[in-house]
Structure formats: C-alpha cells, structure tokens
Image 1: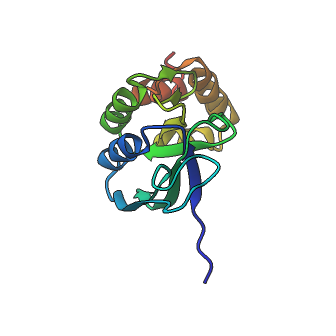
Image 2: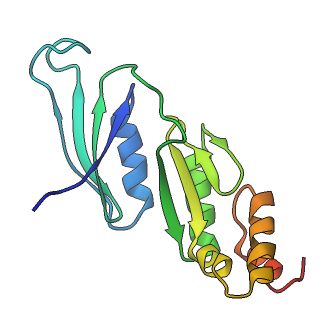
Length: 159
C-alpha cells in the first residue's frame, strides 16, 4: 500500500519547529531524526538534518538544509478545533514570533501557514438556510482569530 506524507523544508531550527508542533496537537510525535552522512549541495556530511513526525493523524517528513524557497500560502496546515479553548491555545502558541492574518490564518515563526478553524464553522456555513450561511460567512471574513460565539451570534442574526 502506498503512503502519503507532506514534506517541509526548513532553512534552520527544524527540531524546534517539530517540537512545538508535536507538543500542541494530541496524538503527535517525533518518529525519528537523522543527518545525511554524505556531502550534499546544501553542505558537508552531517550538516543536513532529516526528520519524520506526525501532527495529529497527518504524517510529515522534514529537512533542514539551509535556504531554498520560503513557505507560502500555497501550503498550509489546517487544524479543526472542537472549542474556543483549543483555538485560543493553538493561536497563542503558533503566533509567537510569527504573524496573524484574517480568517483564522497565521504564520508561525518559521513562516509556515496555519489555519486554526472551529469545527462549528463548517457546520454553520453549510446550513441549508442560505441567509444564515451568508451571515456566518460575512462574520468570518471580518475575524482574524475565530470566535465561535461570534459565529453563532451571526448565525442567529444577533450581530
């Protein structure tokens, strides 16, 4: 059976990034780390680091091999949260040293994009009442970090 993994290229501090990511999401863990025991275009033997890890139920490989292409919005990690406490915890930890954006997006200190979203958002936006879904969408577009109570209020027409 084939296995699919995402691959992340870090310029530096790969192990610190993986340590943070795996500490935040239950069921996450570092599987292994290693170095490439041969000279590569990125440096001498032992200077290029590799790792395999999981974040929740997603598998990742990572390499730390100096500058290449920076992370951008073309790839992001979406974390669907059950409640506001989970959103707040992840948001606060991942934004440290990074930057926040609208609609639940942020970039961590390594430049990786994350979308921290409530499970409830998908439920509200797919409501069969188009007016309710529109109100929720309009409220969502005005938020930076998602506020579940605000989305619920918009759904009920209280905003």
